[in-house]
Length: 255
Image (cartoon, rainbow, N blue to C red; front, side):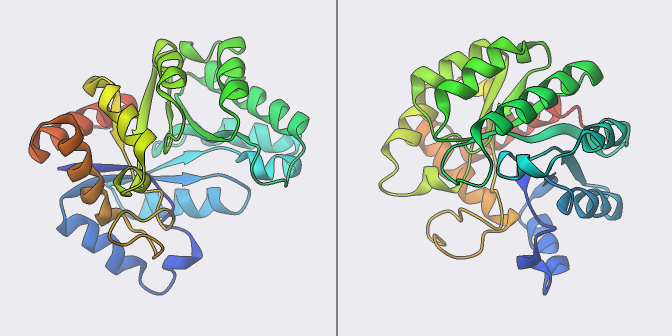
């Protein structure tokens, strides 16, 4: 049994064969999928997908690249959605200094507002961090994110940064990039992350693992991430699957 803790199966890349993609995931032992809504367009379709399938859950949040589009009433909307029985976290939220689509000060404000919302409603957070390691950690610390905890989605930073996140009650999640042959840092970090704080994901349709690198990713491929993680940890795939499933069930408070 495996859980894909971060996917975007409502993305247009799956419009032609979404049902088959979901069936393949089930056939490959993926028993839960956390689908991520991250702006005004994707949140409703993510929740709709979770309502359609009992084993799919949704997150709701505002992505940093879309931060400039977030209005005060959107934050109120997010708060109302947190009461939905299939919504399990706020995210993905954070900072992205790679894509120059939203000013840094706007990203910072929107990030902080959502951490405060998470603390208000008592929900964990899913963090998007691209080229902003220092500022993400500092913001999490300043906004007392440790009170609700969270997950560093598709982690790409150093072990030193990961330790700071672990100290704030965060899980570290790895996706397809950890399977790449030249992915030295992610493999080293995964080696150090305690098993009880480890999660795995796909970020489908993005970041497909080896040998599908460059192609469309899908939830069934989380098994390939599990195999690589198990090899790095020196344990069986079955044990890795059991541990990461238990971690995901606890983190997202799944039945």
